[in-house]
Image: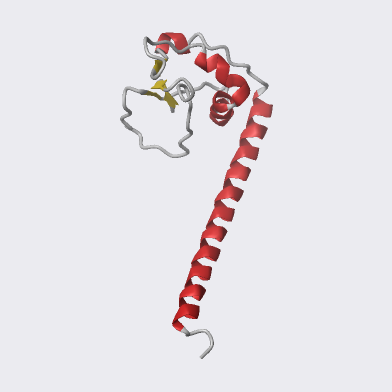
Length: 131
């Protein structure tokens, strides 16, 4: 998903949805980007959001107000995307998936630790720990 209208800093930012419904309706301010067999979707997502590539995206935007920039579909189609061999893109995408899975596991573990800590603190203040 690609935001076509936002502040100059955020216009063109993208997000990746691993699972979507078949007939998903999207607002007109978001483009759904589809790729062919030459581009891995995760590679494209990370490329679009990378700080070194952001200027290419920003240069496509226009608008009378700098508080809200816009990218048309026609201008987006002018974007030149570096295409690495698909094997490298797939390796990169697999690495990203592994990192995301590890981040999720770590966040879950941290949440469990926080819950345990909060539970112990409640028991300690109620005097339940030392009875």
